Length: 483
Image (cartoon, rainbow, N blue to C red; front, top):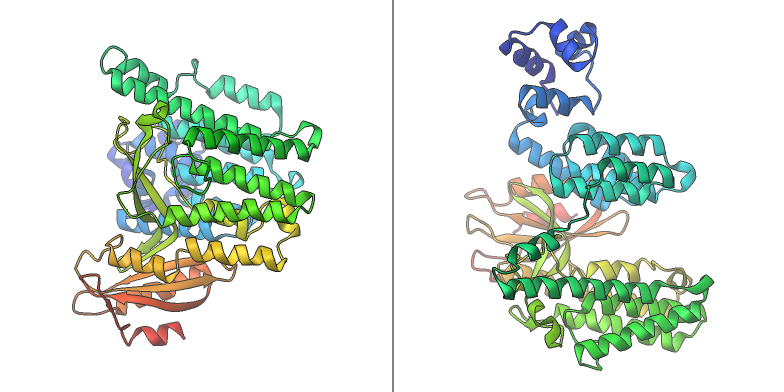
């Protein structure tokens, strides 16, 4: 990327009638340093960029001379590479470059802190982590991101005293959540909304209790962990008023975690029948939820949580792209609330169902006992089954995305879906958009560039639709691309 930092800094300084000496004093650096900045002989530290931008009242992107479109494209590129990176070290390498180029990208800062915590203890640079956290928490003026950054840092901090010092310095004086603030506002104003918020709080606390039941082990007692999973599932049957654990409802996330943990714990004792029975139920629930028609109403099954009734809509999660190319990395079931005063979203973020969260647990054998069974032929049958159900590049899912208008061409042109696989066996769905009067020439060029960046090892055509969403034959120019 071509940066014009030096020229921009000189222009901003002169607009304020400042000398290099005066700017150096403001920034706390030497006059020689300012001179080197303005001639592009050196660049300031990453933490200094927001300080300089803030002093002159401009954005970091503007200071660096990055256009809005270029900035968006670069940020999307970094995000896509981060999502596809295999392992904490690979992710951290990308995140460090992302932060260096965009110091105000709080998503990159947050994930950097989390990635440090995912490294083996001997490889963690705790001083770097603390410095990143300290600089970010001082600079970040977005309350939601400020709290998330603090939680991200604490998740990776090993030293208790240092963690408590950070909490004292950067945490709020009072622990007042958005939900409590909203409940207080509606008290005496709108009792139905206040009651809805209260139901949501109780629902979240109930989910937390289930999470505790399914993960707690008394001195590593796996039998006790099995009892906890069974207790959680028994409570869920009562709450949902349905003995069938595979029926889609608002308890889907808690059911799936309970079933997968139960399966993993039974396999600890090599209790194959019970372990695979729980795994079968989990996958059946995923299949049933994905197959719900749009507009299906789902509930918690009990009137005590009636405010949480939702209507479903299937969609995809955007990964990145360019003018004539979009890429996606997972399916989603978006849940639209009928009664909560959240305008379709919870104040703590979108509360939807992402099948891939659980698919990855199964396909990547995330669980000590799943790992032991990873090559077992019977376990592999479940792997293939869940891939087929929730894979973003599966024919039926691609057909839904294109024919139901989940992804549209704003110009009303053809759409061509390409199934791609990276060297790390990660699947991506690329959708090429037709350029008016020029076909797919630009989309193909952008795909080649993106495929190289993402380490795509092979690609194949899934389907093409016309402007009305009707399947048609693939365009001729696509065939050479796939070779």
